[in-house]
Image (cartoon, rainbow, N blue to C red; front, side):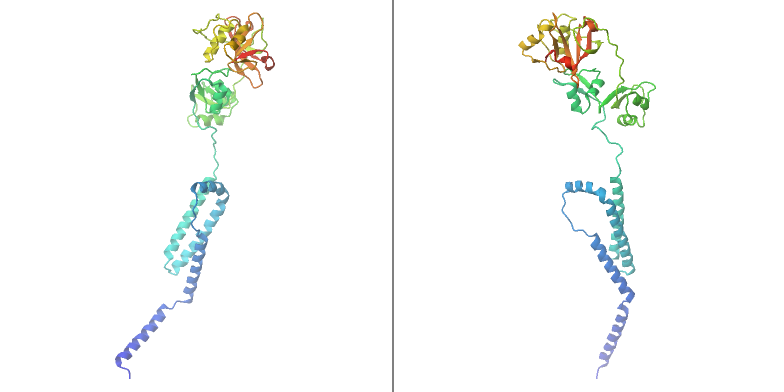
Length: 380
């Protein structure tokens, strides 16, 4: 026979068991919700998870820059799908009161932010660049020449045309520059123009056959506009052709084309032993100015070639900027200085005492055709 204490203990245990079973038994709806949330969470994690990879940062940046332009739309769509999935998972986890409900909610917020940033970055990367600079600098600078410099070599050094260097420094058609000369160097090929009263960007562009938008951009005058006295760079500008009046040719011993008198103030250097006003006097002074002196006692022009050879100078039939042209014809002959050899082989020279262009003590310039240029000697 059981004791009263044992019977009471059995009654209590039986009651506790019934109550526990009734309070912990889940309903069918909750079981379905738990199962759905669990499966959805597994799917989200499986889709969004990527294993860590070691990537070289420089290589990755280069590869990503190229591939991102074609993959941004796909990545954005994938990010939106993940956001929707995590939102649903977060809602189910919250309704089912799962322990990981807060974790899923945080994941949903992070993915939404990541998706928005990815779409913003994609639009920023694909935005076209409106202005493409054509030079690494935009200012006008000064360059001091050294021995051996010429207009073409200086132009090549700064990536601009030889015509740009000649125009900006009033060198005419000459390609020779003396050492120590300060040259104005533009940031791009074109012209340097000083604004006059009444000028507009459009009128300047029309005058020099240039583009008004490029003038505005290169000179940064979008907001400030232009003012008289201001210096403007005219990209790819072309100077209007000047009207040249050719003097009549009389007693001319040279064959050539064009020609004009030059106003040059040359002063005899200490070593100049030639008669002032003659072609030899000018050739000596011009070469000294260019840092390429010649002999003081080479006689008349018709003996300069032989005297130069004897002194060790290179003398040949090849014209070159800075060389002395020697014509041995006639009793005295004639000398001039080559300023430039044009692309077609024509030779542009300066000279003194040519009677077709003013005669004694007058400096003029002219161009000799390529076919005729080979008839002369050149002292280098």
